[in-house]
Image (cartoon, rainbow, N blue to C red; front, side):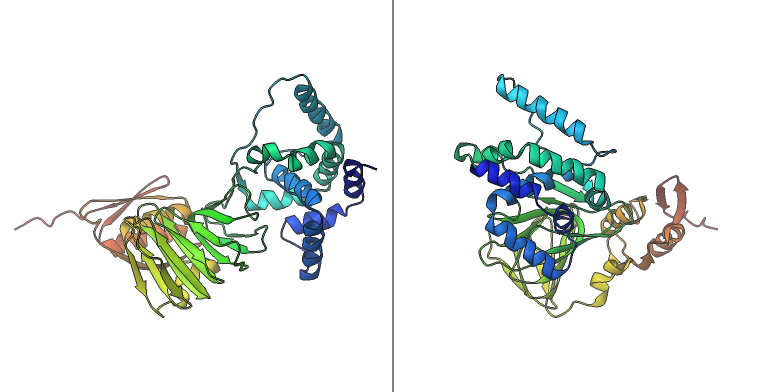
Length: 357
């Protein structure tokens, strides 16, 4: 029996429901540990599961049938054999976390996926093991996103967990979980990282990169405002593009990083308000108009437009995800202006001057 035939037999006998639970971040700790050991002991099978997981991440309105999978595979093999180019499907789709999990739970899709893996086992085996095409077979970056006003969680391939804030997005670097663990964040997220000395966990934002030294931490990133980080446990190294030495943050510390790279650290100053967003509360404390504008867009899907004469003022207020009708009124009161609502746009205008007598 060849290695290819042996791999095919193994795949046919796999517990696909257990694999689906593992890749979707579900199952008991014992089940997950057992699955990790199985994949570590069989790199070829791990490569197949990785390829299948990459396929699941591309959302489709209807799961393919086994016949459709066979037809697609036959078409690819025919183009491969007669020398015709095969389209490069590597891309970075935006995948909602809810859609991703529902695809794995769909028994019809898992059945079709099993057919794809079994029928294409030889092709995937060659792709995974051929030494001369390693650079071209790396998984493309994949983005996970939440909708406006929604929070959701994600378990990464290395076991680390991410709680993603409203209207936020993480992009996993190519081959995340292999030799490196790097991702990019837009918006807000809380990371509970599985520490690994050999593979640093790095979160990139527009203002800085945050390197885990075994920790739980939350990051808020906006292009105009820079980034904010609060450390709940462990240590985080803040690395900016300015070239200065990384700044180490301990549990209880928080820091802000300006777009230019300046780091301002507040030791032992973190409070429950810094992570109140994880419980569905949006809290502003002397927040700039730029910060309020970005957060309202993600949390409530509204666009804030503030008169230039009021733009230097700050906002102190608390909202929850059901506060949509109060947002404009409260922001206008904080800034000392009037409110004009135009669809999804909230315009805060300067008060008219009092006529002199």
